Length: 443
Image (cartoon, rainbow, N blue to C red; front, side, top):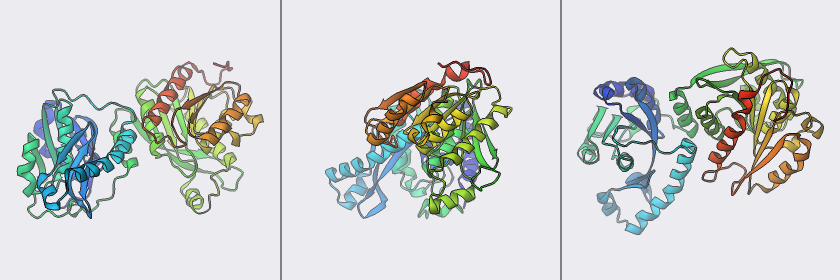
């Protein structure tokens, strides 16, 4: 059988998993390709959804041939017959694992955003992938779930190689698939569409599966004065129940609303009870031109006009009207966020700048900012740290927070999680206590 895509495959797989609906299972998608399939399974079963990160250990010279795999939490699986066949020593296998460990750690940081691994004690876990050949990564992920106390671990995938089934039953209490082909070859053979799943796709799947209400919207803007004319840009609005305020994200140069770093921070703010709005600052045509010429990247005036349009749109939208508004800006987007806060003091309650360039905003504008501002900079981002310190005297209610060991993109272990905690602490309370349109007193 050939599936149209992972979504259809996930729905068909869910039909085979009906008996588990009453067992309150935890569905774990094997990142990355298993996540879109797992979303459909969890939705159909009414189950909790999370992920597990594992990395295949590919044989030198034949990276698609798995000699083993590692998974988060320290789980390791080694295919002894593959090691013997390739002639690898224990030291060489350990070296393969060490190389893959850095990428595994990076994915855990991006996808989890500081969240702990889920508590699986006593639970039935359904481990979902988009297809299983040898099952090396699935078996490492199974051991990760067992280390966390899972009582039963079920492997589920739309297609599983029949020849691997006896070995898979060693690590799994049950193995479920739509099809068990004899002649397997590659997983992609069983899909009409088998696009690569990116980090952004994983985060988007997790966000869609959360209990927050997400809405795709368009932010209208007027003539910017730069000859671009009126138009609109796409945005993603997420409003958790009982939201205490709204945080609008203003991304940096060359990025979009799907920036993995901003999406990660947004997810943590949503968990803290804050609504989020992530929007593209440029139209698709402008983005294409910018990709070729960088025309818009440092046009702070244009970016500010778009941020201001988003603020005004949010202040009247039925789901966010009356909420205190915070701005989270990154890089050049932080300059636009600060300038927009100066333009709309009656609407903006607080600002957080991550690795921002406040020096791109004239001091005369910075002095007009009423909202309390938190400037977050990496301790190893020397020039940006100097620039942020230089503007502190111009912003009436600004504080500087330095994240030790972090560089400009905050890619180090725990750095973005640190930023998320700082941002949540800065926004919560300030947004909830803010009355839009009222006279402002600094906090």
